Length: 446
Image (cartoon, rainbow, N blue to C red):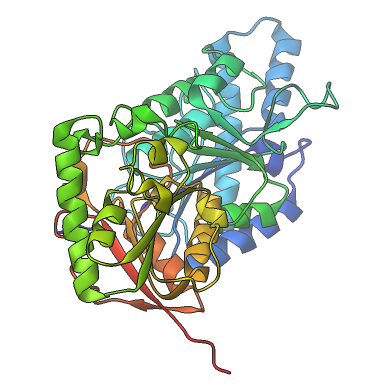
């Protein structure tokens, strides 16, 4: 049984450099931002917008120093906090008809009975920036991602204002970021992400996207799950180097049933794969099949046992290395966003717990590829945040970097024009609690 939870909001930290770039309010940015957020609200999305202080906060801090000399770090922080609250009230005024009437300035309490599509937050206490406040909201409201908007395109390997050869870092882990920003906060610290926020985000295994706020088309791409420019800060870098022997031994995530280095793990994987293959044969009886993200190929082995011409695709060479010798020749190493098979080659294409492990921006491309190589059915099983029982039975797997609610996936699949979503899906695998999506490819009319 799947127990549903309310879909969480998208957290956007709006840098003060965007609201008041030079001490004056940027009404052009705010007008465009207002239009974009409202267009997303119409689509059913909810937002928490956290306002930063920006340069105006520095003006107040500098003024205080100029008049009386030395000022304590606490007083400097309070000056900045109050400027964030002024910026927050400006955002609340802009969204007054659809925003919660109170500005969040106390993060020890959650909003009581929050019904509006938007809530506004601002600075809280001395000792950190609003980056930290945004991460607290992500933790308390179970948000999948924090979007950090400022006047930079992302995180660079060196200061782009000094080094013209500085390169944008597309992916970075919290451990790597911690080495760049350190662990100490000071008022006015100019870092791509607050060191104190970095420590909390690392602890809760959050995902943060750092991007330019001036490019609102890029922001829309992030929200919609399209390719974007920016830096993704994540618990792990998910690539072929991650899916090595340790992963398949259950040491880097997942649970002990993933292990393929023990007789018990192999036994369980064979039982589950046999049942899944049996029901695939009963319900679909395809001539051929492609298992995308096949791992060591247990499912392929049993599909072939039941007379189905089955093949597999996995990102990791280790997966193929660990496969049964009789199955290896049917497994290809490759990326789901560029599946190395022909159009309409397989009657049945499926994946199990793969999509939530992809970068957000790769999900639609991956789904489109599975549809391209299918001639009839596409079946995706996805772990979602709705599945409380699944969470209870399984160890947390931080490789699930796109762990969203069922409604997120429903919106993606329902938006596809060349397939039909079949809502009453066959009960193919009673040993799992993932959300299942069965698609049927529409035939082109000549």
